Every structure is written in C-alpha cells, then in structure tokens.
Length: 293
Length: 251
Ligand SMILES: [Fe+2]
Ligand SMILES: [Fe+2]
Ligand SMILES: [Fe+2]
Image (tube, rainbow over all chains, first blue to last red; front, side, top):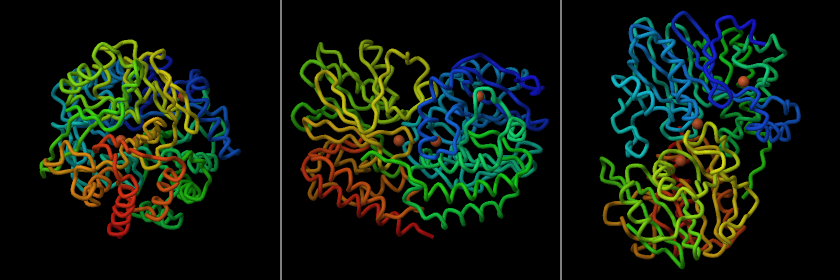
C-alpha cells in the first residue's frame, strides 16, 4: 500500500510508529498513527462515532498525531508527538535535521500527545528554545517555566518563512495557540478538523486519500462527528455564530496548506475542503452526542 | 499539607503562587478506605517532595490500591511516577475516553491501567466509585467521579479557584462566606477559554443536571480546596461566575 508514497520513511512500528513525509522542500510532516493496531486500540472510538453518525465507517479507526518541522535558516519544530513515540520521534528528527541543530520547539498546547516529548527532545537538542503562548500564569505546573511566551500577532522569522501566532478558534486546553506561515500559506489549527482513516490508508496527504476513495464529503461527516468529542463545548454554542466565525477566518487567511494535528495534511483543493469544514462545524453544533451526567 | 475533609477523605498537595499573588492549588485527594486507599489525581511534579512525604505520613504502611486520574495533563499526572515507584502494586484508573498509547506516560505498562466507563460504577477495594463524563473540561478524555460513601464528586478542573495566600489551607466553611464568585471566575476564565463562545444558560443547565442526579455532599476540585459545607451555594456562585465570563467577554 505504501508503494506510491515515494518519499515515505517510517520509524519503528506498532504503537511507536512515526512516518515522515515532505510537504515542501523545507517543511516536513512527522505523522504518528498505529495502522494494524488501530482496531484494537481505537476501535471503541470508531464504533462510537459510527453509532452517533451511521454514515461513518466503523473500520476507519486509525487516528493521526502530527508534528511538523521547518528547515529554514532557523529550524522550527511544531509539537513533539506523545511519550510513547519518544524514541522514534528522535530518530525521525535526527534524520531530517541531518546534523543541524534544533532552534525552536513550538508547543501548540500542553497536552501529552502534543507536548509529551518535550523533555526527551530537549535532552537531545539542549540549545533549543521552547515556545508557548503568553498571557497565563503558573507555567511551572505545565513544565513550561523557561519557555518563550508568545502573543497573538507575534511573528517568528525563520529566514524565508514567517510564523505568525494567531488566536485559535477552537480550543480545549487553555494554553493553546495556532499559527499561520505567510510564505507558504501553511495553517496549523492544532486540534481542529480531526478525521480518521483505515489501517491500509496511513501516511497520506488528503489528495492521496482521494485515490483510495476518500472525499471532502466524507471529511465533512467525520469532522461534524469527531468535533463533538474533541470540543464538547460546541453543544453549548450557536451553529450560525460558529459557522460565521469560521467563514470569516477563511476570508482573513489565504490557506494553501492546511496542517492540523490530527488530520491528513491538505495541500490541494483547499476551497473544497474548507467549505466542507465550515459546513461540518455548523453540523457539529447541532448534532446529537450523548453525555453521561 | 494534609487536611482532613470529611470522614476518611483527606486533601494533600500544594499550590503555585502566580506573579499577581493569586495561588493555583494542585490537590490530591485520598480516601483511606480501610486498608485499600484510593487516590484522586497524582499531583504536580513541582510538589513531589511534599506530596510524597504527606502520602507516607497519611498512608503509613498501607500502599494505595488505585490512583484515579481525572485526566492526564501534567498538573494531574506529574507526580504519578513517584507514586508508582514507591508503591508499584497500585493500579491507575483512567477514563475509557483516552488512548493510552498517546495520553499516558510511556513507562506506564498496560497491566497497570484500568478504565472507568461513564455511566457505570465499580468497586475498588470494596468501595463503589461511579463515573460520569467531565461536564466542563479542558481535555476530551476527562471524567468526573463520585464516591457514594462520602458523597464526594471529583470534578477535575471544574470548580477550581484561585485564592489569595491567606486562604491556602481553608475549606469553604472556614472562609467568611464560602468560596467567592470572583475566585471561581478567575480560575474558570483562565482554564476554559471557549466560554466566550457559549451560552452560560446551557453550561449551567448541564452542571445543574449533575447535581440533580446525585446527593453531592463534597466537591473535590483538583485546583481548589474541597467544598464540604455549602455545595449548593458553591454551585450557585459557579453559575454566576460562568454567566459573567460568558456574557462580559462576548464581543
Ligand atoms: Fe487538545
Ligand atoms: Fe494509520
Ligand atoms: Fe485540565
């Protein structure tokens, strides 16, 4: 199945597996998912999602965890993957960096799947500067007491690439930030737009998912359902307000690479997928998702 | 700091003082449970020495049977390794809504982990503990837990509050008029950044449903001292805090 994914390199296997794909000549995608193990470990989630929304495929149980690395004059790592991938993440980083040092480690938010390898990566690259979002306090309980604090609107110049910190639309943890890169139109919207794939569809860009039967419509249905799990507060929101907020966001940012933490990277047909996403968020607010009180 | 809340429920854990002088506590609750102690959350790595000393004093020679994690972020799990190193036989109980291979520390082994399913109850060391969804939370795989014997609801981040130094060791009945709305508001507007996008009425209706369904006598927030005296008053003040956050921050 991986024959046509020419540039794919995979480190480790099972629960620690990390695949590396190249997005542009200077941006790399480090993707963790568990392939054949997904039925055992994530099958309950897939079954729940399919029960809530019967359009969903209960066999599509594999979930993506992403990290990205920019190789510019400065090197910039986006999130760390989770502790279970600490060895494979370091191997993949070592391969991509190829002897260069890591300058920045930017944390989208302080949860284990996003920041859980912070200590391991710091040990391997002791000179790196850790970056988190400002305007909070008590950073030491999050292990972030010596991080650089960024504000919305701040820009991190990497050389050719300019990372602009932006206010997230959809958050779970308080210490959450998104970013937009101006040269490539790369948006990292972190937990937004979680989708799923089958065990034989790993490490694919969204256009490569289409080659195995995926579609923007499928994406819309999945995100409308998974969003109620990822952002349970949507049940208290207003569908039109959320939809309008998303549409306004899409007007403001010229997104050419859509690269969340738990989604296949989208590098073509952006308008089609962004309009599916806008619709998905309206649907998510209105959908039924059982809560146990 | 060890404080007895009610019956066999104790509270330990320290606080962090912010640059503005307000404290954020990170608590660990202990049910002694007659020979099979149950811990709720593991505390912060920042407070490891103090927590471990307090646990040893409180537990004596009795190892904890189970460590229940409300969710798995660092402030709740940072001290987990020290606990399991000291008492390797303890089991961890997490929400069935987490994926263990990504949301637990790498050194946790599969045989150490048990799962609590929302809507069910199980007995742990003979003690019935029931599980419900985290209603107000900052991580999807967060559950709230209820100890029927003491009537304690463990609410993870919800019902947390920041307090001035003078309130470090005080329960609600030891304050002049319970936990003030302002303290609850300070914490909730920081912890739950999505509140400006939602309807306070709907949030509060959901919180009220939880309390209508069971007889809660004590609230055990991880980031606050236990509320053991005026639960209804505290819920009312939280409702007010949510209302203020949702309404005043709306664009
Ligand atoms: Fe998250
Ligand atoms: Fe996969
Ligand atoms: Fe939390």
